[in-house]
Amino acid sequence: MTRILRAVQVTPFVYSVIYVIVFAVYNFVGERVQDCLDLLFYVSPLMVVFFLIYSYILHLCKWHKIVCVLPTIPQVIDLIDGHYEFTQYEIMGANVATIILSIILIISAYKVFLDGQKRG
Image 1 (cartoon, helix red, strand yellow):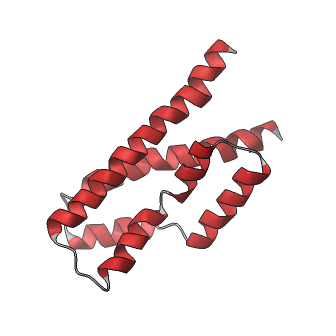
Image 2 (tube, helix red, strand yellow):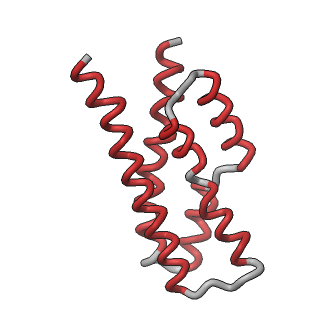
């Protein structure tokens, strides 16, 4: 049970590290590679809901809930982009904002999970 709890706690943060790398790559690769990355790293909103339910059941912190929702940000941006066409700079700005948020959340995860274990 402890291993399951640890996996549920850490998995969204590990995914966020990968997500930051993918978003950084997005700005430098062609559309075909972007499509492949989208296919590999797409997270269904239904799965996000399940992650949030697990987070609630296990009484995990607000940072964990935020990281669970993080993969939906590009989907929301894509949905808006379908009705209002973003410029390349606006899309890059959204990617940079997502990267910054991800990095902040990864740092908070380090402080909560790894740094907290050293003290305990």
